[in-house]
Image 1 (cartoon, rainbow, N blue to C red):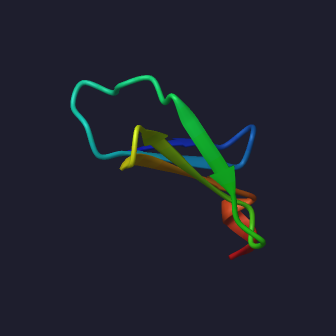
Image 2: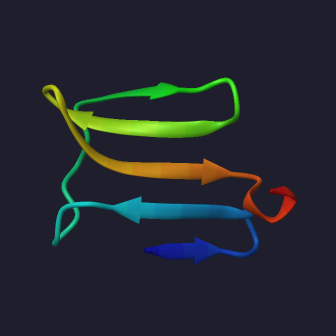
Length: 51
């Protein structure tokens, strides 16, 4: 997990080392779900300090 305070973004990776996503989707509440094929490999949470 990594927090970028300047960008106000939290990155959560479920694979170690982190794997590059082949697809992603953004939810209505500004969470980016990152995939490789059908497997969720991580989340990116935008504007995390406002939650």
